[in-house]
Length: 182
Ligand SMILES: [Zn+2]
Image 1 (cartoon, helix red, strand yellow):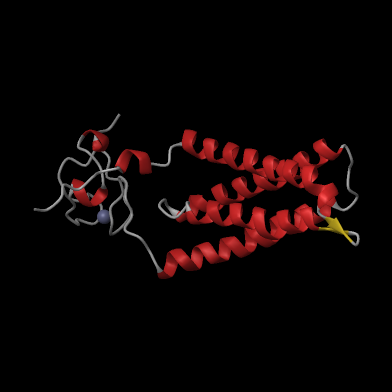
Image 2 (image 1 turned 90 degrees about the horizontal axis):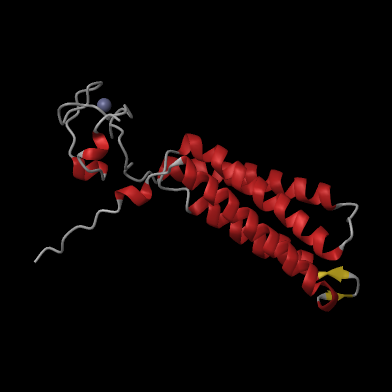
């Protein structure tokens, strides 16, 4: 009765192409939020308060930043901090470009505001991410020894050449071919 386990290992692998695609995706999302803020600006400004910018800065951009953080969970955290920073930078810069391009107006404080946003999100998100990974680690999938992180590609036996821990393809989420040296 056991349902067959579905293996989605290949899609979980964080290839450079996938990293770049994510950065581009967040840049597009940031530009879209910037454009939306610019378009709605005439309708969302009451008593001199630019609610479009408030909604963008305190709701939409943080939601995207958290999405970036939450979906980086499956891969090795050391590299994720760079990836997270790149995605946040793309989001922030694209938002600033989007709002500036559509309003055809350069806000004097835009650079400061966006730099502050980036700093808060990158530092706060980075700390959150490391704490999260530290206290709630997920089993790591990929060609790495679950005990010592040694790269298992090319390991002839089902045992880590570095620390001797036995492993199965199933627990690494890999196929035989993916462990073969290229
Ligand atoms: Zn090992």
